[in-house]
Length: 259
Image (cartoon, rainbow, N blue to C red; front, side, top):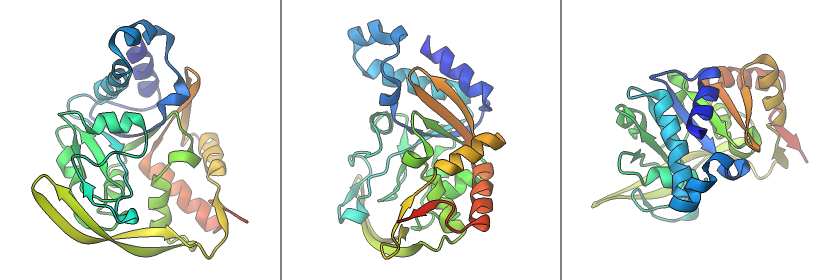
């Protein structure tokens, strides 16, 4: 069954019991696994979504933490961020996950995360409003050396942790910009300014993270396996952050392509 296949793949590539994993996903790249087609016909697509989520939960165990991004970009769009109702814009699996009863969500009105696990509150706690500071969710994931999992997506599409490292190492083609944020959490309302290290539109460039992916795979920092018609990549937060620092030190334009 699918649960066993993915569990074996994740364990083979370094995920252990008690681990913290953060999953960035596009499950459409896998299609519908043949082994689940009959179940899905009977029970609907939620059966597939639950199969993926249950697999992630099982592999980290009761002491582990499972996170997924549930980004809304609400503050960037002058919209109210409703913690309980604002939909994730980064994939059907993330939206389904964040609505589950045993899952909690952070308060960030641009880059919110949803998490499951005994220690979910600690990692989701909003300590400042800098999107990628050391106190942000991304900063905490790097500090504990969490495992990033790209589940059906490449670095170029979904590796938001690269933005964290770009801020940390002061990539010249970005700058800090504040956005007014309004957060609604049940009957509570918070108004704040949110800092985001945005791209400098006066510099003409495109992201070019494909080379980072190639180097990471070559060095063994990024582990990769095929699953169905897609790919699953895994990497430790500290290792990929160190590689990004090396690449920026080597060439300040290593993560972009000037146009």
